[in-house]
Image (tube, helix red, strand yellow):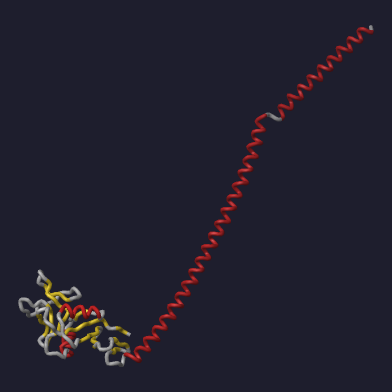
Length: 244
């Protein structure tokens, strides 16, 4: 009897031990079912995504600050430009007022001079020893030299030999020429074209009387003519007058 009981207990004990082992295996298998391997991958991807999202937010914040700074700088530059333009306008107005004062002063002291042509309170002013007519000033020589020398003399005075552009101007020259001899003017025969040209490049609209070797222009009591360029004659220079 006693032997049977012991055997039964052993069987039971083995059965109990077997059941506990089976339960442990089942728990381990259950644990494996609760945390499968792919969930670790999902967790890693989620953490990585959060890190990337935070980095993107930081980058966008920095970019936004730069944009705000750029807009602020642009607005500041625009305001500075407007301020500078306003200051330039004020300076321009001040300069114009000062120039007008200067013109008024010059008119009061120069427009009544003998070498000034007055019109409507303004006048055209010429240097001393020069005579005014319309918008030009004229200088009449008191000595004689060749055409080329006369041309160089006018250039040295920052002027040119006389170029006649109207009948009224021609009459003014004839009336103010003190010598009876012809006077050199800025006219010359261009060869081989045989065209009479003024020193300013414009052509003469008629052909003056001339000898076969007379290719330099003159003016005298009878009007425009020509003479040999190496002859010594008086000459006339002209330059624009100063309008004030």
